[in-house]
Image (tube, rainbow, N blue to C red):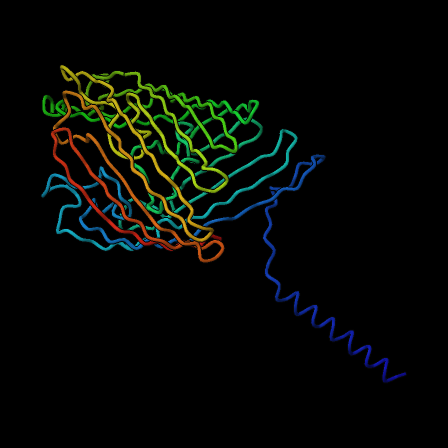
Length: 405
C-alpha cells in the first residue's frame, strides 16, 4: 500500500509539474479592455486582425514615373522627353512588397447598436524608396451612422475587378475620404445613403501662369462635397446609382485680399455594379461615370478646374468607364480581362501637355494552390494622351504571390 501511495504521489507531482510547464510555455493572452460589451447589453464583442503579405515582381517594357513604378497609372507614362519623370531607356525591373497590408476590426455591442470599427494600413507609399505604413481606412459605424475615413460613397468597391495590379482601371471612381455618412436600409435588398465628404480639388492654372507669373493660385476647401447613392443587390448581382455635388473654390495666396478668387459648382453621376453569370462565381463588372469637376474622384488623371475662355475658371468635364469579365475556370484557377478609360474635355486655357485621356487594359491568370494563397501573372497595357495629341504607351508583365492571414 505504501508503494502504491508513493506511486500515486509521484504521478500527481508529475502531472502538476507538466501543467506548470504548459502554463509557463503558453503565450501571453491578447486583450482589448475597451471592447467589452456595455453592461446589460446582450452579445459578445470580438476583435479581428486580418492582412496579407504580397510580393509583386514586375517587368516594364518601357518606363513610368519612378515614384509610381510599382503600378501602372496611364497618367504617369512619360510623353515629353527629356524632362518628364520616367524618361530613360526602355525596360525596367520592379520588385515590390507595397501591397502588403493589415487591418484591425472590432465589433462591440452597445445599447445604441453594434459599434463597428476598422483601422487598416498598407505599405503603398508613392515614393519609390519608401515602404512606410500608409493609412487606408479609419472608420466607425453605429446604427445607421458612420464616421471617419473610408471609400467614398461615389465609388463602388464591390465592383473592383479581380486584378493584381494595385491601382486598377483608370476610368473608375476610387478615393478614400474622411466623411460623415447616413445609410437607410429599404425593402428588397435596397439601400439609400448620403454623405458629407472632405473636399479636395486639382487645379490647372494653365496659361494664367504665363499671363501673370507672379500669381500663386491654390485650391480652397470651402464646403464639403455632398454625395447620395441608391443601391440594390440580389442573387443576380448588384446595381448602384450615385451622384455628387461639389463646390470647387480657389484663391490667390500672394495678393491683397487673396484676389483673384472664386468658386464653381461641379457634379457628376455614376452607374456601377456587377452581374452574376448563373450559379458560378463568374461575373461582369463595370462602371460609367460623367460630370464636371470630378477628376479628384477618378482613379487616375485629370483636373477639376482649369482656365477657360478669357482665362476665367471653368470646371473640366470628365467621362470614365470600365468593363471587366471575371471568370473562374475551376476552384483553383481564375482569369480577369477588361479595359478602362478616363477622358477629359480640356479647356481653352490649358496647355497642350495637359492630360486628355488615360487608357488601361489587363488580362491575368491566377492560381489558388492552397487556402489563403494566390499566385499568378498579369499582362497590362496603358496609354497616356495629352490635349495636343501627343501620346505614349507602356506594356508590362506582373507576377504576384499573395498570402493572407
